[in-house]
Image (cartoon, rainbow, N blue to C red; front, side):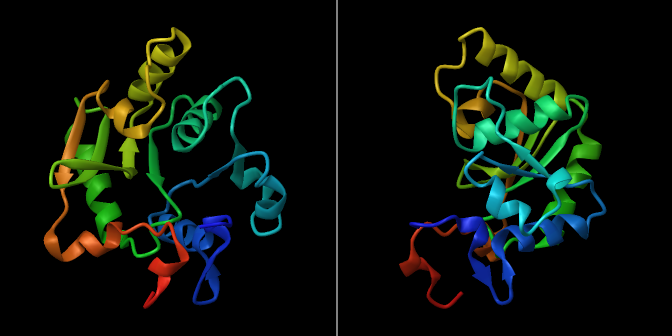
Length: 181
C-alpha cells in the first residue's frame, strides 16, 4: 500500500478507528497492536494505554507478533482480533464469533473461512491456545511465523463465510483496490 493502512481514511475515520469503533460496539476492552515505528502516529489518534507495541523479546514480525505481544500483556484474556484493513467488516459477524466462543469451550480459536481457507485476522483466540503457540515459539517448534500456520497447532473452529458476507472480509493491499470503497 505504501503507507500505514490503519491511518488510511474511510469517510472521516481512519481504518484503525473504524475497527476500534466496531469492537467498542461489542462492549469489549480494546487495545491496538502496533509496532514501534507506528507508536508515535497512533498516539496522536488513540490513548497510549490503548496501544501495545510489539514485544521486543519476540523476534518475529507481522500479525503473529502483534497477537502474541497483546497476549504477553494480557495472558489470561481471550483475544478477538480484527485487522484494520478489513474496513467492510460488520459487527454482526463479530457477534457471531462471540456466540460461538461461548458455545464451544473445547476450541482454542474461532475464525471465519472462505472455501476452507481461514481468515485468521478476524477471529477469537483463547488464552490457552495462545500460551501453547508462545511455548512452541520459545522452544523453536514454530517453523513459520504466520497466523495460518499457528492455526494448524491449536483446535480451531472454522466458520464458513456466508456468500453474501464475503465482501466483509475483503482486505485492501493496493491503492487500485480502493476504487468504489
